[in-house]
Image 1 (cartoon, rainbow, N blue to C red):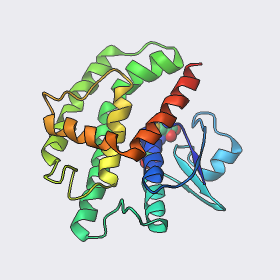
Image 2 (tube, rainbow, N blue to C red):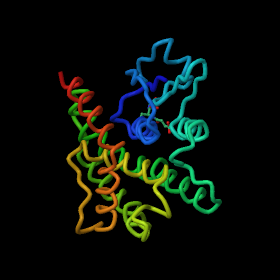
Image 3 (tube, rainbow, N blue to C red):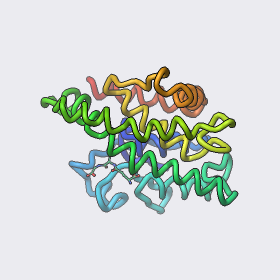
Image 4 (cartoon, helix red, strand yellow):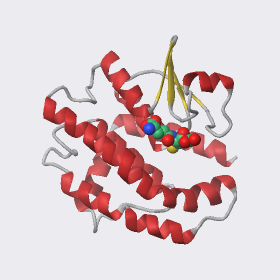
Amino acid sequence: MKIYGFPLSPFVRKVVIAAREKGLEYDLVPANPSQPTEEFLKVSPFSKIPALEDGDFCLADSTAIVAYLDAKYPEPPLFPVEAQARGRAVWFEEVSDTVLVPAGAPIVVNRFLRPKIFGTDGDEEAAKAGEEAIKKPLGYLESAVSDSGWLDWNFSIGDIAVACTIKTLGYTGWTLDPAAYPKLAAWYGRVTERAAWQQAADEEDAVFASMQG
Ligand SMILES: N[C@@H](CCC(=O)N[C@@H](CS)C(=O)NCC(=O)O)C(=O)O
């Protein structure tokens, strides 16, 4: 199985963590969406990362890929079967992917991608506006950590997605303040202690180090 992309992307990391949680073997194939190869475009027609190649089956989009993996390898379940739990798991994934990611993007672009990867100046005002914008979704997520220790009843795709976005924000020097978000900071600690997360973090550190030269 091949996963195309760079693990610094929250969407790619989501697929990597899901594969690791399920104990799957994969090859991480570097793919640059702005300079797509023909091979990559066959797997990801809109040139976005991540994409998956599993034998002769190809799929793009992190949510679609994790849904596929979860159906093919049901243990441990990442999309719960029970109706309310399933709906809430997808809800938290959406909060991450469609609210937290866009709110935090100016921080990642202006304090990490431009200065550290592309060698251009970042817009600090835009980054500061991003810091303000992420407070609302983070405040909501703080209130959503449940007695189970996870965002809802059980660890799910929702926990993975939100933690992946927080990890990418960490590349900018931003940290989840435990004084402002005590439950969420403790929850993030629990997610990042999981074996799958630790293995993926080691792999990611190696990729990041190779990008730094
Ligand atoms: N909904 C998609 C979003 C994927 C996405 O936007 N990936 C970014 C990298 S973080 C990308 O490929 N951007 C390149 C582009 O949009 O052209 C998913 O969940 O996989």
